[in-house]
Length: 84
Image: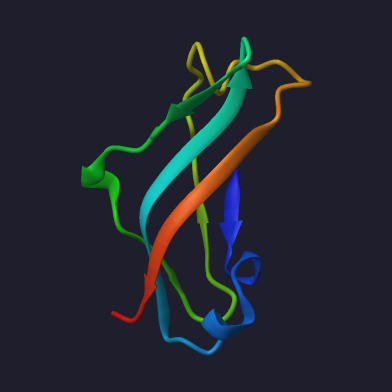
């Protein structure tokens, strides 16, 4: 998966850098909401510098959220900040 700078709100487009501090994934599983934070804190922050910045993510499968099922709906929540 590739995170592109244009995925973020318009107000972020003119910032010199966008730093992703945390990434959490959510999915429905057996009537419950399952959650996973697939990237260790050591891998943060990820930087999307410049107006066309992007970062490639390789997220491992797990038993609850990234199951590999084609019909599984997965939602991503990012915590980020602007600047250096």
